[in-house]
Length: 224
Image (cartoon, rainbow, N blue to C red; front, top):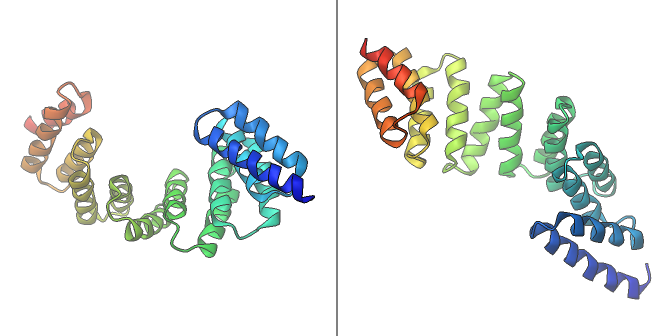
């Protein structure tokens, strides 16, 4: 690429990223394509234009574009993680898992790859693998409430009820206004033979959401 075009490409790419981040998706798309008209092997433009296509509803084209970027830099963890997300949206679960695992081989401390891999394993019913992925994510970011909630589901399915209760309690400590956490913790306590504690949890949840039908149903069941 000529030096003049290189400078122009850099400015265009910066404008594209700014438009993308600012929610001007059509304009960002035009700018990414202009960058690629000057430099068809611009890794970041290929990668981010693929993410943009996915965000605009064209996951198939987005996956192809991110894969083109990865042909240039096969070990880029962020691109691999984004490819995993797009492939999961396309229900290509094997390819999604492969992408997340490659991202983690490239960058073992990438929280979002561990967490997304957990979500994918949970979605496909591989609960032991989901639990391992969530545990790795929580080791990196122990303050992530949704991760504690998700791993609690995995523990419950594996028959590890005390661990599930503890994880759900941690989720509630981190985000005490998440009504769904109260419902799940209450159901865990019911299953563990602790109806009085379950009643307390349901009532706490109802102070936040007085008309929540699930909480009312479970509370009524406990009070019978």
